[in-house]
Image 1 (cartoon, helix red, strand yellow):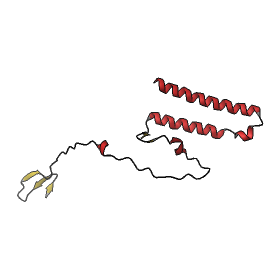
Image 2 (cartoon, helix red, strand yellow):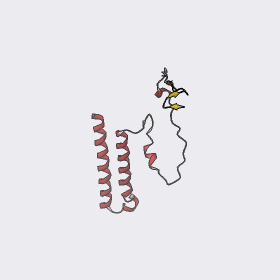
Image 3 (cartoon, helix red, strand yellow):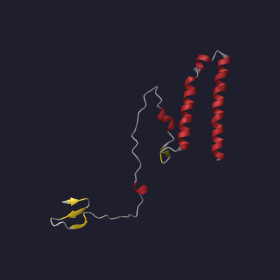
Image 4 (tube, rainbow, N blue to C red):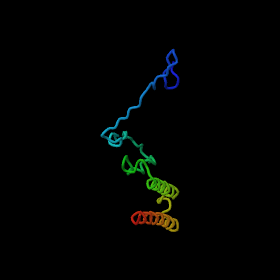
Length: 124
């Protein structure tokens, strides 16, 4: 017997809506009612370095949810990790002065880029 949101009786008489809207306003904002998300404890196996641990400085309300600045930081950390992973271990190249100098140059350039980025952040 319902037609849309109106009631229709047997005689064909329409009645008002079957529902009404009520508005409620509280004294509290949604952000004040939210709790911090649960962060479970974790164990890292020996010899493993999960990528997420390079972002240990990030946490709820401390960089998370991630903004553009945080995404840049994540990308720089990934780039640094890839460069460091591509370098030969120092113990294997210690006898070759040329390889040691090349490694130092790569690491120095990487460090200079990081300092340049930090200076830009401070100036902004």
